[in-house]
Length: 218
Image 1: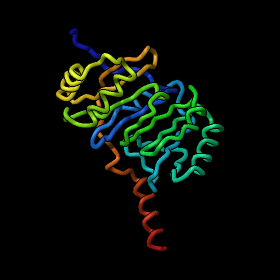
Image 2 (image 1 turned 180 degrees about the vertical axis):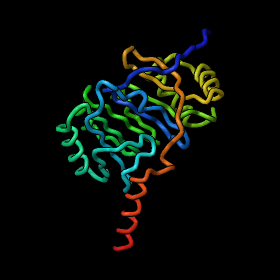
Image 3 (image 1 turned 90 degrees about the vertical axis):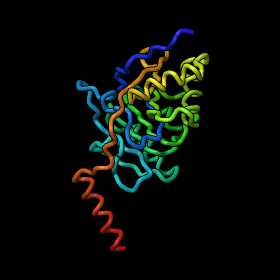
């Protein structure tokens, strides 16, 4: 059987729907390198999160809007904002379930990044999927990644091939991803970057202290 040779990921994902399938405890995909366009910068950037702070652990930017998602009413506000916000628009979702109603609002003027540790079952809307770098081969996550790649890449992608690819990537400290953007669908490797969320900026520290002071006043 001929071995699979995969190339380094080097595509612009501006205007794509991207899934970052974690967990990402220490490192994550280099998303900003893939979605930024110097000649067409984002006019607005919003963060969708369950957290009470306006911090992004994976894409630490100055967001124009931060939505704390708790119920369907919050999604009504979010969908309205997405519809009327200036484009191109960046929407980053962290650790929240995505409703079906969102997909019909997304087009090529909107770049959508969903970062989650929960296993995503509905992967059809996504153009690209980044998987967390795998350090242990015999895990349920490894099996989950295999099934997803078989469904989006090719059904004949075997467990033997999967383990051989992951073993090489594990030694190199790289991750695996799939995309159908600009081609019919292929797998690539990528170099992860270290999470920056453990160190807060001055603005984030200020927001944290303001929130804490409000808690004590109550």
